[in-house]
Image 1 (cartoon, rainbow, N blue to C red):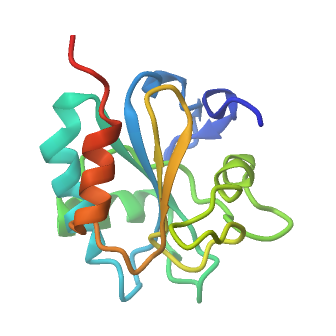
Image 2: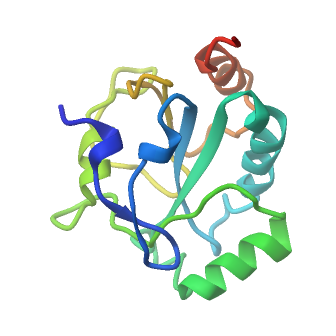
Length: 165
């Protein structure tokens, strides 16, 4: 397995980046979309960001248009939608594929993690969530129907937070 922090990604604005700036934080990586029945989960994701952001945690959003083309927007449209409708302050990255032959290398790594029922592999839908420890280990996978406020997800986030100095 390669180091998640070394996988090249681009910001929503197209600038070269990686997860390296987030090393040492607990991360929740989520494939997001603005025209999905699950889109209201943005509110819960932002609440997680607000609650734990100053405790060594960040949500990272990865727009994806693979599921019924529910993220058709341009980078500017995505940013505006998230800001205006949900007050999103967590980082958003470039629109990527999370399944199939053009799957982003980051998701090649993430999809090796099994969910609570032992199933790994392809992303089922928008808003699938992966919890990464401060050490860069994929520690949990939550399927799209698991709301950000779900006790199991919140407990996992709290358990993954870096130890306070």
